Length: 565
Image (cartoon, rainbow, N blue to C red; front, side):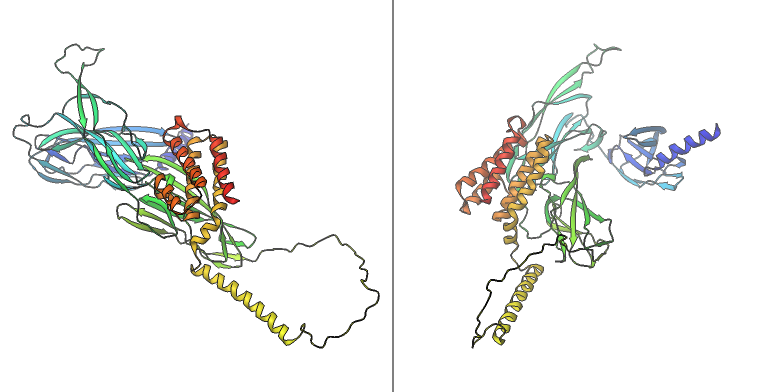
């Protein structure tokens, strides 16, 4: 029995210790009034602890605590455990105070929290003389942004009343933006000081906005309906809550200006805009010329994932790289923002034996620095050995009997014979060296980058567009409508970028059509581009009006087929 209990205990200990231990501090306010209070919690996660020692709380009196609470949860098979020591503190006088670290002993050693600063200020002498008892603020993370950047819109409620319900009068429209609702249900209320008055605050609505085109956008004021508990109403009992009194308030409107990022010729720019990280790895350290090496690039950031494509790398001429595949594309909420991650799989085939190094590059536009940032990852070198590469040998032997053309012949030797002469030999040598020189010069141009990269992209535009349609076809078969239309839009816009050197991914549809018209392209082709882009955009932002995906796919295939004639 003791052995069974020990095994069970060890099993749960391993599960718990598989999570990262944390010991941290949280407060419900960083600035309070002299007559107010602050709640402070010290929380230990994913490990057991003992000998908890709180800080001294200089400048405060402990009004309540320590209140110890324990909780355990299992989410997707992951066990997490929390032990919280809570205190309520009253300030002695105004000032700025630093509450030192708390400590606790664990199996991992002595853990400490970080110090936290609390500012205590004097409030108004007559707090009821001025100030609203409830209002709402509209908060934008950025009022000036870029196409593809994530902009956070928050509606923050400030209240001193017992607010029981919050409802927005109508759904908002965000033309020109792709939007994602961000949950705020798990965020606790905080307290803030406004004009010497203390309010409880709560973000009641948060939206991530992803601009799709340039322009100036006006977010209209929003009406919010509140339900406030009526303290004067006595019609309440054990089974009934307090009657709610309706209050209507208005959140102010905002203006957002959206522009394109500055033009760049950096080959590894992938369309990512915001803040990103990148790692890369490969499993092989040795291979032959008969094999391929696979490099996986992992990127994570807060921009518009639809705009992020696989970056282009600069490799040795001795390595042939194929169009990468996307093997992971996921988005998830992380705090107040949406984060997305993508994994690109590159297939690289060595042509010759040797020792090689690969340095993957990923460039994004950093919206905080307002500049392009290139991330690199130096992978370990790998050796390439000569493979078998056996020549094909014909097994079937065919015996042919060759009959003479003439039974007899009468030949005369020419006095001037070119074949075999010095002039003939010099001519052959000159031709041979000329061909070798052209090949070497062409390789030099490609390696040095002097060969026109725009011309190379134009020549491969149609071939790459057809390959991208294969992914759209797979999405069509799976009936993944939204992702299908995204892939169609990307395929068409990338074709326009490659074929006509128009930055289609970073400008709106009307600017794309205008640029195509300036290139003197056939009007029928322009109409086809315009119709496909318009239908795809309608399907993305108004699914109820979307076209049949079969007809959309056929129309796009027909367009690319017409361009190949």
